[in-house]
Image (spheres, rainbow, N blue to C red):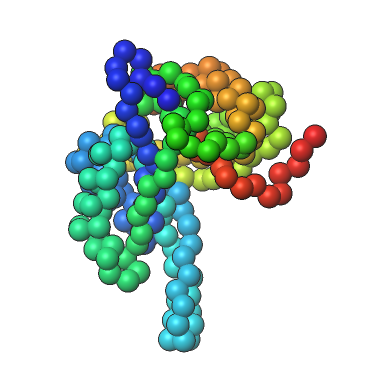
Length: 223
């Protein structure tokens, strides 16, 4: 990934897992730290313990917040999350970062599929595409035309400076779909370019794409 007309800046994927209802708070905190937006997916956590089992509380709803940020901003945000959400306490949530191979959709970025310097490289890539609800199948149609064998559509919601709307002075976070596609590196490159061009990801509010290295793969059928 490189930014047109400016020096290279390394970005990372931030993941924050919190109790249901706290995802919006995480996004608001991130905005205060300079991170423009993110995507919230629903999940389910497990709580162990005899008392929890007796009370039927072994399953708890969670929200997983995905954000892409400049590395320095991301690290500052992690410290903020830890302090304000008290992640150092049991069952208050977790937060972590992961490196990105490429990221498109926020700012003027050109796609560059080169492996990170100093990295061993990987044969596979995980391509994530976040779009408005109802466009996940469109993403998959474009991806299949580019050679993808399949993918997974995850229901989510998101908020960014381009997408948040207000109703009765309340911020409304639009529903989203997150599409996950696993493909070999050269095929992933073709998929990213095709989805970017067909869905105009470079335009504000059209979505984002981020790509991660995958180091071990099982269950993927090859031709």
